[in-house]
Image (tube, rainbow, N blue to C red):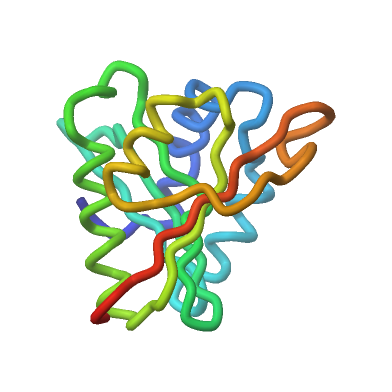
Length: 147
């Protein structure tokens, strides 16, 4: 795992489209996100054979780390990469003395919800039309103790 670089955006976009389909973020969104690296954003990638196979992004806002995106290319899913990224996110939360971790997830994404629950996240809300018309999101939170 390494810090993402601006030059990684094309590879991230490829995975983004594979995983999120019509809800994939655009190049413009990633350009905006990456302009904030070192300030309020952290992005990391996992490579295998010099090819990005997974990534995540977090926003740091007032003691909260918001997991803005996390994805594993379909050919590498169910191999522990999401857990590796979640472990790194928890380490970053400690490093930044975050009090809370937040994320949004599709209610029908049971695999992701199960992963987040394994890491102690709880559903705290519902965002109507978050991903588009009639496409809601569950808001999940993990309150961090002894940071």
